[in-house]
Image 1 (cartoon, rainbow, N blue to C red):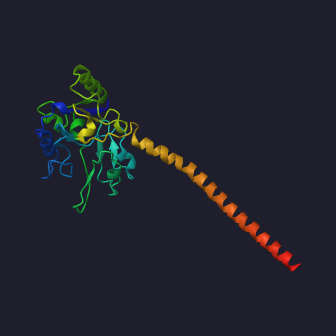
Image 2: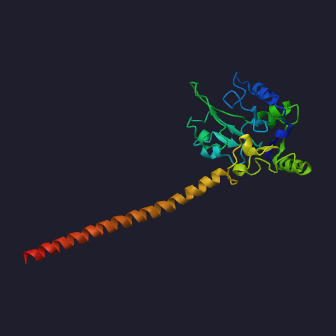
Image 3: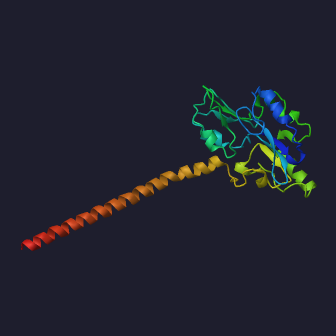
Length: 252
C-alpha cells in the first residue's frame, strides 16, 4: 500500500491550521507563513481569479526526481509514501533543488552546516500509525490521508457526483509520473500556479532514455568527425600530389 494525501481546494477555508500544526510537529523556527522555506514546510495562500486557498508542500512523487538526481542517496522513497532526506549523507550539491519539478527543496544558506529542508510527509508519525500533523489539524476536512489508489477513486467520485463543482482533473494522478499529494479544484490548476506542462511519464525515466542515447550519438559523432578528418586529409594529399606533378612537369 502506498499512502497519499488528497487536498480538496474547494473545502479549504484558508485558516492556516495545517501550517501551524506543521510548525509544532517539526519544531520549526519563526518564518514567513506565505512561502515554502527552511522554516515552513507547508503554506496556504489565496491565489487565482477567482481566488482559492491553495496549499503548497512537497508532492512526494511516486518516482521522485530528487532521488534519482542525488549523487549519494540522501533522498529515498519510503513505503509510507514519503520522500525522506538523510542529512548525514548529503554533500550539499543541491542537485535535488535543480531537479525538483515543483521547486520544493530549500537550502539553509545562512547555516554553517547547511541542510536541505522540506516536508517529510510526517514519516515518523505515519510509521507509528498516526496521521500527518497537517491532516489531523484540518478543521474543514480539506486534507485526507490514506491509500493512494483509494484516494484517486474518491477524488473521481467527488468529481462525478458534483458536476460543475470541480474541474475534471485530479492533479498529481499523472503529473511527473504521479505524486503522493493529490489535489481537487474548482479552478483550472494552471490559474492557481500549478505547473501544468509536466510530462505524465516519471522524469527520471525520461532522463534515462536520453542518457541511454548518448553512446549512440557519441559513436555517430566520432564516425562523422573521422569522416571529415579523412576527407580533409585525403584532399590535402591529393593537392600535394597534384602540386608535385605540376612541379615535375615544369622541370621537363
